[in-house]
Image (cartoon, rainbow, N blue to C red; front, top):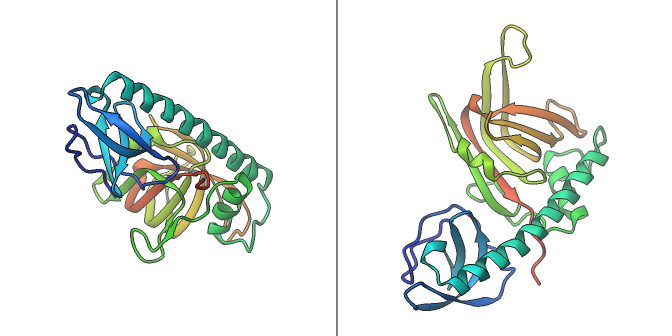
Length: 242
């Protein structure tokens, strides 16, 4: 789902999934026009709000000072809640390293860690396609192809404790451990949890299970510049609706 252009102000498109954790607020544009909408997300240059079920990304520069301050206040509150949930997800994964979670399926680690953190579980199934899982608010999408990797710059938005959904993904290339030869990973349909990110190098560290036949939690490192097929979607854990 992508935000549209709101008639109140000019807006830019930002990929996300809408959440309902905030009440309607009054938003005033710099020219005095007012609209009622829910706060969704604050980015560096935009506030994302939802009006009549549709999300809009509104440039902060187009808001009146009081609405800019409201956006910053709500953004700080949301960031604090999300950071707390992410830390709890991380603690669960770290404490279960080398252990089998649930029945050992990959999605069990995601669902059990979210439950332990007090976050909402799987938000939707079959999105964006059959059997795809949505684990919270989408913050990044990285897509691979034979001659390109799209979206690597979005890794700066990914944080420890975020959920990852792989679909039709294949990584391959020269080995990164100093040894000769090549390597490959294949994840047709897989779920994992972010342990750490080096956005500048395109390196992703994860906790996951049911990888390579190992039905217990392990750590892995992926070089996303080697993604030659498929996609990874990253989701931020969300607090239950009030």
